[in-house]
Image (cartoon, rainbow, N blue to C red; front, side, top):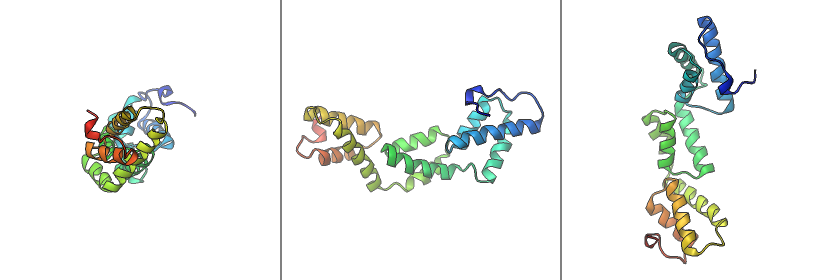
Amino acid sequence: MNHTDDEVEPLSSGSEADAEAAAREIVLRQLTVRARSRHELATALAKREVAPEVARRVLDRMEEVGLVDDATFAEDWVRSRQQRRHLSSRALQQELRRKGIDPEQVTEALEGVEPDDEHAAALALAEKKMRTMSGLEPQVRRRRLAGALVRRGFSSNLVGRVLDEVEPDQESYGSLG
């Protein structure tokens, strides 16, 4: 059965067992694509009009067998997104909250992010962006780099430090105005 999420029909008829089987199938299909938070899976089930009590039972069972684990999801998400997307802790926190991760689990997942990790992510992003900006005036390049770093959630102190590292001969961040 090769349905996209939008092609799955609502679960409004049939027996309770059929409804649970269909809900399990939706969840497993979602998890085949990528790991998801319980909230994301609950949203997918609600979108398919799965009865709330059926959704809760299916998701509880998925947690029992270890297929749904928000704490592990959050830790893996932080590690992956910081390495590949060069995101700050602040941006990661916002993403996890949007995914419905409990604030305590968000805090625990972000505890593993050291200041050096955040610096490395900001520096990697700045160096990547620098390669595409070689033809720009130094002030324009610096301003665009600063904007890219700030949009990823890095603090102004870290942005200034990274800019001084990638372009040490230019004006300091504070004078960009």
